[in-house]
Length: 161
Image (tube, rainbow, N blue to C red; front, side, top):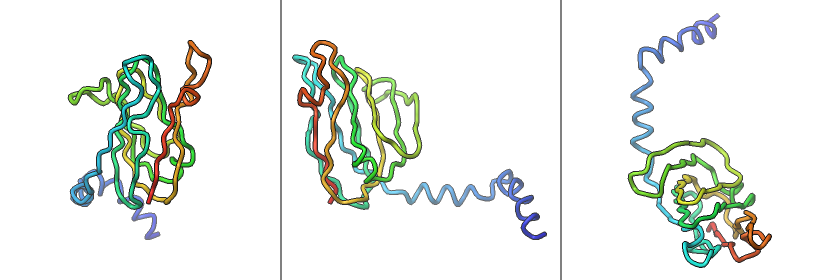
């Protein structure tokens, strides 16, 4: 009987805003993420590269990995092992690479790979968890050569210490 009363009272508690102070405190105490930017591709010579191609993260720290695609090609970050070694908070997709760009989509929860359109920017917020060295690549096909971008050199190493 008591449990039924508790469940019946929850909508009223939320409607009255009684839990708002708790949510507010949680947001205020959230640490600022360390921002790390990776440029995907290049606008010269159809270059398929991650810049930088090696990153080191500290286990337990919150990061904002900002992916900026400056090329005319779709690129992705693909690494099932790395994505399994982090706790994803969210992925925010922006309508442009500019600082004043507007978010057009937010994905909350786990991530397997992230594809970024030409001229696009995506920010992935996560906590690095499992120490190790992880290979990251772009398996997008190149229409001119028939090779993947990874086969053309678009690979990186991410380390969690």
